[in-house]
Image (cartoon, rainbow, N blue to C red; front, side, top):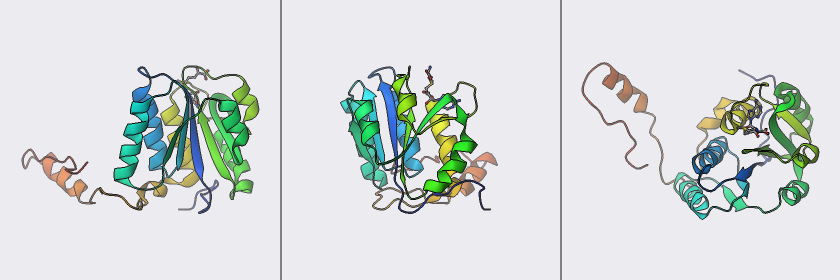
Length: 197
Ligand code: SAM
């Protein structure tokens, strides 16, 4: 089914900027922000806050095994990074406009690269000014991962999640569902975890 809102142009690149990472408290959350973005086809992930070698290594290892292009980068200055971005900048915030309005607007700029910014514990006020769009995924507080997932699903459509990643060393065979229904019907304790992951 065709979606009402903008779709991914094949040439557009989508990057993520995650603000104010804290080494210990945010490692899991920031990792999941990056992995969720990558699963949707984002090709760059930058973060500010505390530099975290473990985070970077684990993301690079995953990208290496699971394929595709995914650049991981620590940036000291969010101002510089946002100002140098060559394309549109969307900051996800519950204080922003209805995301469906942003998506309508973005249809005019389908060829332009897109930077999506998510906050951490706090968002520096200049980020609101530096962004082309401040965009809400509803006006309730939830999470950066949920915000990215909803925004990208509505931008790209969920079929993007089933694209093959070039150069992947691991792959999930599509037979898992059958195994799961067998296990559910009581035919034994089958180990359904992918062996090569
Ligand atoms: N207190 C922070 C602030 O000043 O905005 C919010 C912290 S929230 C846990 C972390 C990030 O999740 C936000 O910066 C935003 O990017 C994203 N987020 C949470 N709820 C959102 C919503 N309803 N719409 C869009 N983004 C949201």
